[in-house]
Image 1 (cartoon, one colour):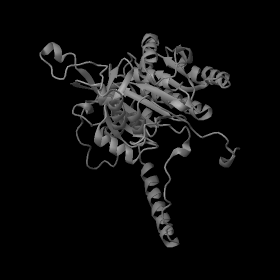
Image 2 (cartoon, one colour; image 1 turned 90 degrees about the vertical axis):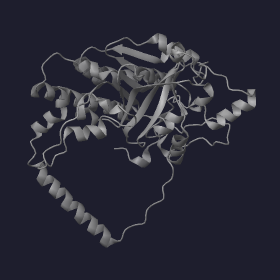
Image 3 (cartoon, rainbow, N blue to C red; image 1 turned 60 degrees about the vertical axis):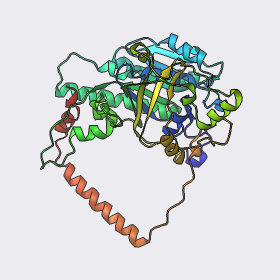
Image 4 (cartoon, one colour; image 1 turned 180 degrees about the vertical axis):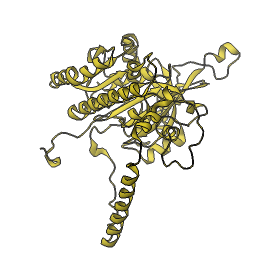
Amino acid sequence: MIQLDELTEPLDEIFSTGNHILDQALGGGIRTGMLWEIVGESSAGKTQVALQLSLFVQNPPELGGISGSTCYLTTSAKLPTGRLKQIADSNSQLSPDCGLDHVHTISISTVPILQNILTNVLPSFIQQKASSPKPVKLVIIDALTELFHSSEKTSKTTLFDRSKDLNRIASALHTIAGTYNVAVVVINEVIDRFERGPAPSSSKDLVYSDKSRWFNTCNSVFGENTKEASLGLVWANQLNARIMLSKTGRRRYIDESELLLPQQQQKKARVDGSSSSSVQQPQVPVNDDDAQQATLVRRLSVIFSSVAPCVSLDYIITHEGFRVLPDDSLLEELKAQSYGFANEESDEPTQIQNNATALPELTAPAQPSQSQEESKEDEWDRYWEEEDEDSKNVDWDALELSLTQAES
């Protein structure tokens, strides 16, 4: 067994999403060794984000990437190579050698096929590419929910079978992420969320609606909590991070200068004295036809993450990919808890540290006295004894059914 002090390679790596603000919101960018989920309704931009990640992982370290390639697994549609090429050709942050050649794709139609791919085919392929200039560093499944659409009537048996399949898939994904140090991104869909009445006062269990409110949905804008992530809490418990994309119905006239950080705006003003707009929209709509030209604004929310706090931000989709709209209060908040946020006075681009040691130093707390430690240990012992006693009386079959009955 290898000891921690014997490791010669970093435990994980981080690559940029292609947007500086989103990188900070995610704890520095997309981290390998983790299972990420991007969930949202149709046309929210889930595939757009996945395509952009599959390109930016190819960037060299000096541009925020990790010189990796992508395995892109599709379930219901083919890989949109036209859109992928458009992003690669138009996004100036990408290295010239980033493109379709390093995005490997395969189509999957059933759950058993996916399990076989994850257990046998994909590990072998990753090992084969390990010695190449661009080893596999990102695996994307677009979209997992498509494999679980069924016309069968929902029953206890079907729920049990689905839970078993999800656990097997998640186990295989975590094995791939941990063994080969790759990032795994799974695209998921949403379902309608229905409010239920309060649980009986005598019940000690946390009802599904309460759990879903914390792990399956978000409330950053009005109407956003009408949808929740599909596949239930069985799947949510397997994730390291969940990101929800939402359509807001809002439109804005966006100028290119709005998408730049303050120091980038100052530098651009010094160079040409003006801010050119790639959107080229008038500032005030004249009529309804003009109003239709305003840019559609969407909302991204980090519902939970093991490496970053919960946060929400606006973004748009352009020909270059997704672009986050800066918010002064959000920037200050992210700067206070960031991992290597750029100095506003510096003109140099931010360099992302591709290892786990880039975290800020923490001051060690004062050591408690022996009596305090013993008191805490006694308190936790009592807590777990009580929890264990309560768990003996739980009807686990009924609980599993209640966790997923919202999707019936």
